[in-house]
Length: 434
Ligand code: UDX
Image 1 (cartoon, rainbow, N blue to C red):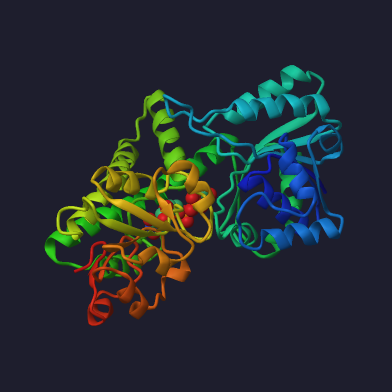
Image 2 (image 1 turned 90 degrees about the vertical axis):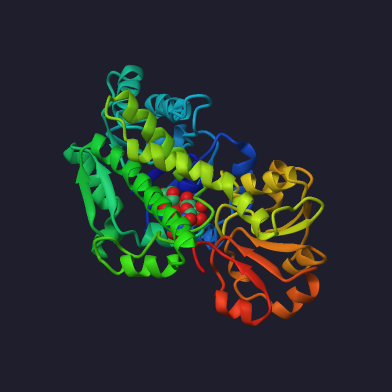
């Protein structure tokens, strides 16, 4: 099959490279000339473990190429993916669909023969209908079907998530489109990955419902963590105790400083807006959004309390800035709320992150960025773990103790054992654990 993938962001580039690896011929298209030049020269514009090798191999084997103009690739394509960004629109929280519709118009002009146009971007219910209308208007003679095929991959685990998904969701009732989508996902089909064929609108809603549910699960355990702190219980054991119930499931029950990233904050907000306008408000998710926003803001208070009620004039060492490990993505990262609040309270902040510093420098002011965890701790009054990078999981406590002014760790990700840290002479404050 020949595939045109429009948009080389996270979803587009990972999906494009993986479809090529499935054996299809894929052209990834982006208007950003620098990005395409970088990809053509063997570089990868995003940080994702394993993606550089995957791209390199498929380019070398002739299944993957790149273009800034979509006409040629779309003309030849059996399937055209729209994987452009759908950021939150300023002001109202709705998904901004400008890029989606612009891509649809361009596709309409270029397509030739029966073309399956697939929306992989996360879009509100009904967007598929709009895309269909846009294409039909531009090409009244066009032979095409518009399909919804949301992507569930996580940053940092994107390739594995794409190649070994729990399920694939395909929203279309067009028989020819169903046949092509089946062919496209054939390797997964053979792996017995469930492929859920459904209507386009249902498929669009599934994506939002999945992300909202996961955001709710995290928010639930975060509230349990706060309760645990008040009643002297242990949230990790609560998570294990409930998670072993198959109906609940163990995943996404790690308490922390609140969820961030490119999806949960934007998609929960978009779902809230869509539901309000549809006259069926999702009050549960409205509350989740509110709780999570407040939680990220409240985390600085937790650090200040641990520091004895004030950080004025103190140096706080922050480990981890990205919204989660294995990414350089800073979007809606808890560190963006925590650090300014600590600075406002009079603290000097020194920070280290294995991949996020370049991005963080654009977003945070007056932070002293350093190149390693021990340098970060040197002479600081306390150490705060904000993101659970693997390299923070086995720090040398002897070195840390020597570096810090006082042995105080605030661990917002629960990556250490409270008993062990205490045994090594640290005052250790974590989330929802005695
Ligand atoms: C998420 C969804 O998981 C993915 O299916 C969707 O396609 C895009 O959005 P991603 O944003 O890459 O993926 O990261 P994810 O691993 O889901 O983490 C999101 C946020 O939730 C992070 O800030 C993370 O720290 C937080 N989180 C996650 C928790 O606080 N606790 C958990 O138990 C899990």
